Every structure is written in C-alpha cells, then in structure tokens.
Image (cartoon, rainbow, N blue to C red; front, top):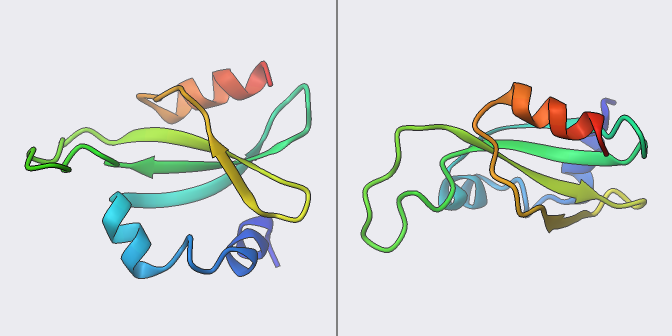
Length: 94
C-alpha cells in the first residue's frame, strides 16, 4: 500500500467525493520535507475560487497540509503555490 493510500484510509471523509467537489480539489500526493522528513499532503485545487457567488478561477494552484504521526491530516499552511515546482522548492526548506 502506498503512503497516499494509507493516508486516504486513515481520513476517509477528507477524501470523499462530496468533500473533493466542495473544495474543488483535483489531485492529491504525499511529499516529504527535505530537512524535517515530515510528510505533507499536497493538493492541486481550485479551492475557494468559486465560493460566495464568485466565478471559479481557471487557474489551478497548490495547497499543503501537514500529515501527523498517525496519518491524520493537520493544518493548512498559509502559502498558496502556483506550481508543483514552487511546492518542491518550499519542501526543500522544510
């Protein structure tokens, strides 16, 4: 079983079809901080761009959540990333 499959199994409501649609998430991956070795859930998403009567952005962006020891998904980082390359640069410092 891959680490992403383990994270999904530990957080089934997080990855439900309704939750994915509500947050406009496109895909998920687990990546590691280079310095800390911590696991992070990286989401490609249109999140919050179509909320409150606004039209949804056509620009995909990336958000990061920490994954805890028991594979629980933790808090969201403040940063919004325009590309996966930008995410990987951030991870190189964490």
